[in-house]
Image 1: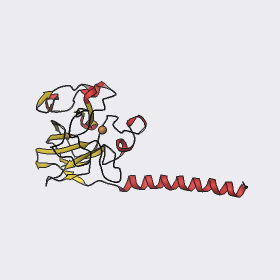
Image 2 (image 1 turned 60 degrees about the horizontal axis):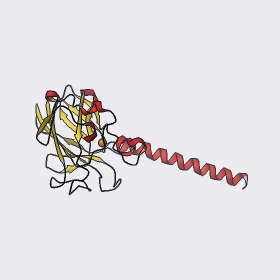
Image 3 (image 1 turned 180 degrees about the vertical axis):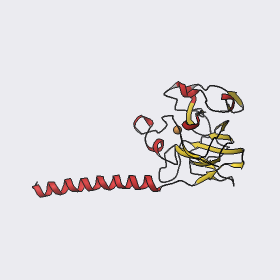
Amino acid sequence: MSKAARFGIVSAGIAAGAALIAFYIVSYLTVTPPVVAATGTAPQVNLTLQTVAAFGHPPHVDWVSYLAENAHGKWVHSTVLRVPANSTVNVTIYQFDTATGLRNPFWGRPRGTAGGTINVDGKTLNVLNPDLASHTFAIPDLGVSVPLKGVADDAKNQCSVAPCSLSEAHTTVKFSFQTGKPGKLRWQCFVPCAAGFPLGFGGPMQSLGWMDGYLEVVG
Ligand SMILES: [Cu+2]
């Protein structure tokens, strides 16, 4: 192969790599999921979420994800949540995914919730067996961390396309936490739930709108 041909191939490779990086950065900066506001009035509001094993739609049919319910009862593919400052947020999470398990059993204990507890399918718990966790809902800045119990692997009628309906296999997790001053906080899942990615932490686990989100605390 001539020097010119080799140079051409290498240049094309570098250009393709640069284009991919540019695409990644531009989509990271421009793709912003819609804001879903909590319902009710401060200082008592409600937030309803669901987790799904597979979104079931483009652009990532098989990615695990959170969804949020808006004031009209419609499920929105978003993790950008708006809540009032200095309020109690009553959270309900319908969990449709099966368990992955926690790498660190520390996360099996709910933290930062009212009473230090969570309610799972009607039962109040102060710890969840780490092997049963499917996802976590954590807001590090508020010290909130909640493990979400997964659906049994052999459960009948499992959901495969979002939004899932309550007639499909799920667990229901309820808890409350307190917001403080206004600010934009990060929240995320800490379970390595991204199947098919290195260590389970790529793809949806590092993407806004899937397993990462913002909590917009407004005054
Ligand atoms: Cu997760």
